[in-house]
Length: 173
Image 1 (spheres, rainbow, N blue to C red):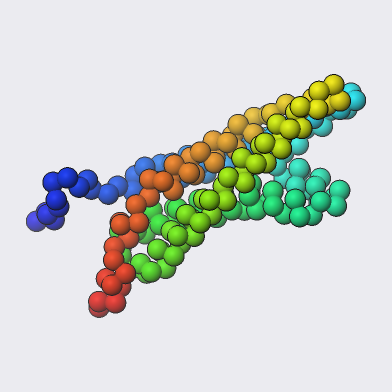
Image 2 (cartoon, one colour; image 1 turned 30 degrees about the horizontal axis):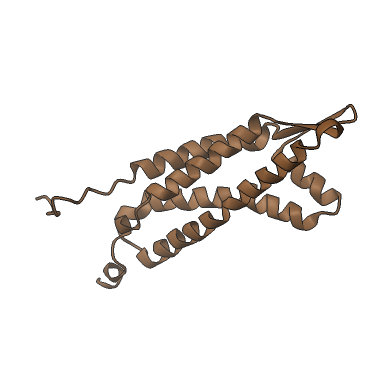
């Protein structure tokens, strides 16, 4: 027997959420392995990955910036993807709905901080404007990281919390 729905409503699908999250995860690994940028200054060329950039920042005493870059570029995107996978895989069992809604709201709150990545790229562009003193070139890791951000945002945008059910369902046993 099929559930009746108003004719104007569409069935909620988790497929786009899962596809975009999987795509982001596939790009996440090489984004953190391949060089992010290459800086050439006074004839010295230095390529850096996201991780080596974080290490360089911390070794130079810029702990706060290093921690922000680590959180915004490595840890938060990974946990956001884990949460989206968990929600996508467990959404339809309607158990722990309140917990899952909390996770969903956490992902939404974290999403607002994703703009931090844009600010970091703005800093990179500012560095590129050093002219004759230095040359900065974006490498494949930067493109892959941008794809991680885009597909994670798409995954989050396509997730509909309505698939989690009502909080009251959890209390009816």
